[in-house]
Length: 161
Image 1 (cartoon, helix red, strand yellow):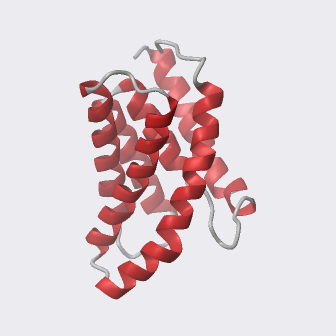
Image 2 (tube, rainbow, N blue to C red):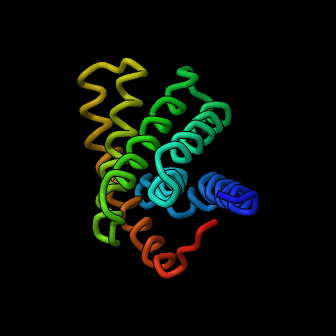
């Protein structure tokens, strides 16, 4: 990735973070909103591979941990780093994914991210089950729909940045 590519990806990260923290609240339906930061991590990892996905996953998770008032500092960092690396490995070891598999990978990445987050924070089984049914499933569906639209809109604009 060239210097211009890093700057472009940094700008995309800043935009994703800004959209998540501002417009994301307006897009909520019954308290459920899409995760633009996870969409960003998955798209970067699919495009540039495991190392870059791991780096941006770490940066995004760390930013969320610092920005959000949570008591488990580092949980988002670890979960998103794992997701960035795992998604990047999928792209490196398989053929280039078309739109439907990319959307499927986004959905899987959402579940993996939340499960690692719940595991790291040490929540009880009943709490995890409730959060899974009331938060993870609806938010993953919303994120997959929004991510699928964004993947479709950007599918023809692949460049080697």
